[in-house]
Length: 158
Image (cartoon, rainbow, N blue to C red):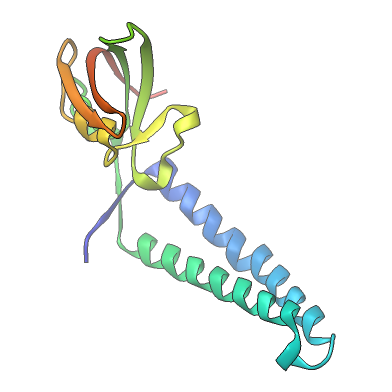
């Protein structure tokens, strides 16, 4: 089985989601099933079928989170080289085509949030920036074509 690499923040986020699903959401799912069951004949009860499907989906997500957390390795960002772009790095880049500058933070897949500037190290841009240093220019194939980015700054920590 492959390891799941997470930052401490990412591990805590998944653990919180798991706790929420196992407590609050399980209770909600049980209540929905009970309510639907009270409507009578279960063979023709679409509300009951929908509640069963939702419960099944919930239990699948819980199992998936438990499995991922059991294989998780939490990385200490202090142990990562700070002169190159690795997990946890905040990178300021310049797009050579548009001249715009952007800032990205490299995170695991579980932590990605594009709106917040957090991109996964397995995304095309994340993969392209990984291991690169300041002043390096990288060409990255993205769905819209090729982009040319210059790394202006790499920082670690808040």
